Amino acid sequence: MSRSSSAARVAAALLAVLLAACASTAPAPTLYQRLGGQAGIDALALDLLERSAADPRIRGDFAEADIVNLHERLVEQLCALSGGPCTYRGRDMRAAHLGLGITEADFNALVENLLDAMRARGLPVATQNELLALLAPMQREIVQP
Amino acid sequence: MSRARHALAGFLLAVGGPAAAAGLASHEAVGFAGRLLATGGASSIEGSAGGGLVPWAVIAGYGAAGQWGGAAFATHVDSGDYTLASHGVALGWNNRLEVGVARQHFGLPRLADALGLPVRSFRQDIVHAKLRLAGDLVYTPLPQLSLGVQHKRHRDFLVPALVGARDDDGTDLYLAASKLFLDGPGGRQLLLNGVLRHSRAHQTGLLGFGGESQLLGEVSAAVLLDPRWAVGIEYRQKPDALDFAREDDWRSAFVAWFPDKRVAVVAAWADLGSIATLPGQEAWYVSIQFSR
Image (cartoon, rainbow over all chains, first blue to last red; front, side, top):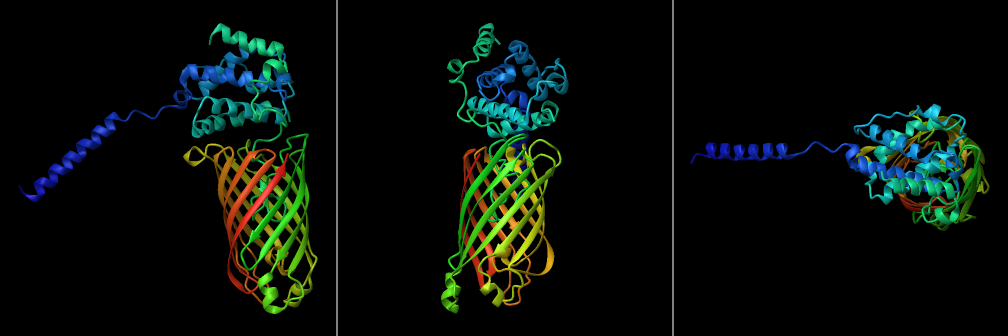
C-alpha cells in the first residue's frame, strides 16, 4: 500500500470521527434548562420567597404581599428571562415597586437570599452568575432613589 | 407548584415569626443588610478601600444608602531587606463617602545595619478620603467612579531628607473607576479597576516627597472563584524622582478570602523592584480586615 493512500485513509477516518462528534453534540443547554426548567425555576422562586419572608431584614416588605401571585409573577419572569417558553404578564418592575420604599440594602438582602437559594439547589457558580447578570439591571428600577 | 407549597409560603408569611422563619433564614441572611459580600474590597497599604497596592472606587465597609459601614485593618509586608506594617480604620457613609486614617511603620534593618543609620524604621501617617462620584460597582453599566485623596506625613524625616527628599508631607489625588462584571469569563465574576494618581511621593511617601508632580496609572483585575474567594493581580506605576536610588513600578498577585462581611484575609506576593539602592525586592504580604 502506498504511503499516500494510507494517509488518505487516516484522514478519512479522522473526518468520520469528527463528523460523528459534531452530530452527537447537542446544542448547549439554555439558562432555562440549566435552572432546571419549569420545575427548577418554580422551586427556586419558592425558596427565594420563603427565605425572604423569613428574613428579619426584609420580611416587612413582604407582609402585605399576595405571595401566590408574587410567586407566579416571579416564575414567569425568571422563565422568560432565562429563555424559557413563558411571557411575563406582570407590571413592569418600576411600576410594581413604586411606593414600596425598597432600599439599596433591601435589594441586596434579596440578592443574598437568591444566592443562598441557588447554592442550596446546587446550581453551578457560572449558572448563578448568568442569572444574576440578567437580574442586576432591575436594581435601578426597583430601588427608590 | 402544588397547593400545599403555596399554603406553606402563605403560612410563613402569615406567621412571619421567628419561630417558623428561623429555620429558613440562612447564616448570611441574619444580621446586617448592606452591600453584597466582598464589594467593600480589602484595605490597601495606605488604608483606602481597595486591593493591596491600589485603591478601588468602592467605599470602605458594607454600608448601603443611608447606612454607615467601616473597616479596620492590619497589614504586614516583608521582603527580607525591608518590612512594612500598616494599620488603620476607615468609615463609609451612605455608600458615598469614605474617610480614614492609617499609620505605616517602614522597617529597613539591612540599610540601618550597613549604614549605621540612627533609626531602624520610619513612620508615616495618612489621612484619606474618597467620594463616590457616579455609578455603582455592581448595578450600573458604567463603572463606579470615585475621587480620592491621601494626605501623608512622614514622621521620621531625617534620613529621607539626607538622601534628597524635599518635603516631609504630600498629598496624592486619585480618580478610580471600578466595575464588577457579574457574568465574566468562565462564568466567574470579574472585577476591573483603574486609577489615575497625581503624586510627588517617593516610594509612596516612605522616602518623603518632592520633585515634579506626576500622573501615574494603576490597575487591578480580580476573579471571584466563588462569592468568598478571589484571586487577582495589581500593578502600580511609580515615579522615579530621587537621585540617590532608582524607584520601580510595583506589581502583585493576591488571593483574598471573604468568609463573611465581618472578616477578610488577603495574602499576596509582590515585586517591589529596587528600593533605596537594594534591587530585586520581592515580598510576601498578608492583611486582615474587620468590617461591617
